Figure 1: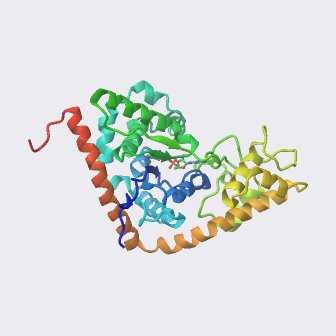
Figure 2: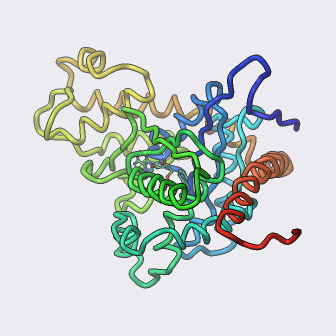
Figure 3: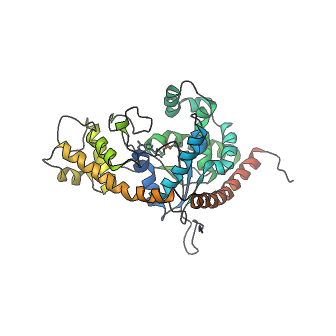
Length: 344
Ligand code: TYM
C-alpha cells in the first residue's frame, strides 16, 4: 500500500506537526478513545500527524511475551479501525525506531531525580506495582520527552493525565536548548475541552482505566453491545434524579461528557433532551449512543485484525519515514553534546 508523505503541498505553508502515542497494553478503553484517539483522527487533515504505539513504555510493567505481541498487533489494527489513515499520517511502533531509546538515554542525563520523583503517575504506579519499581518506570517521562522532541512536534494531543509529563518535556527541552543553542521545538499540549478526562463508571472521582478493579467501571472499545449497555445501566450517579451538569454530580457529569463526545450535543441540548426524564432513560441513551458510535469501528477492526500483511506494510513504511525525521534530530543532539562522529 502506498503511503504519501504527509508534510506539505507546494502551494501551502508547512502544516503544524502533531505527535502523540498510546500504550498497547491490553484493551483500548473508551477513556483512551474519547480523550485521545478520537481527537487524533479529527486532526489528520489539518496537521502533519505522527502517531506511535508506545510499546517501549509498556515494559515498565512486566509483560508476558506472547500476550504483549498479541496486544501490540491488536492495538495497531484497532487504531487503524478508529480512523488513523496511513495515507495522511505516520503510524508506527516506537520500538521500530531506535532513535527513541537513544535520545531517551541522552535526555535522562538532562533530567533531574527530583523532577522525576514528583511525577504523579510514577507515584501511582509504584504503589500499584510495589514488587517491580524498576528504573524504567522512574525515567518513563524522559522516554516520552524523546518521543515528542525527536519529531520537533508543535502540538501534543493528550488526555489530562499526561499534562504533567508534557510540562516536564517542555522543561527538559528548554534546559537543553539553553545549554547548547536551540535544538528542540518547545511543544504545546492539546487537550480537548470534553473527553480530556473520562471517569470510571463505578467511581467517577477516578479516571477510567484498564486497571480499574471493578470490571463495570471501564468500557473497552471492543466490548460487546450487551456489555456496554450493562455497564452504563450500572453506572454510579446521585440521588437528585435530574440530568444537569453541576458540582457534586461527578457521575452525571461524566455521562454527559461521554454523551456529548459521541453525539456532538452540548450540555444545554442534553439537559433539554432529558428534562423531566429519569436517570434510567439517560443511562440507556448514553449506552445506545456509545454502542452505535463504536459499531463501525468494531466492524473495521474485525477486518483489519485478520490482515497481518497489511498491518505490517503500514507500520514498516511509517517507521522508515519516521526514522528519517527522528535521526536528523538525534544527529544534531549527538553533535551538540560533543560525541565524536564515526566519520570525521
Ligand atoms: P496511555 O496509553 O495511558 O493513554 C493514551 C492516551 O489516552 C489518554 N487517556 C485518557 N483520556 C481521557 N480520559 C481517560 N480516562 C484516559 N485514559 C487515558 C491519555 O491521556 C493519553 O493521551 N505515556 C503515554 C503514551 C505516550 C505518549 C508519548 C503520549 C508515550 N509517549 C508521547 C504523548 C506523547 C501513555 O501511557 O498514555
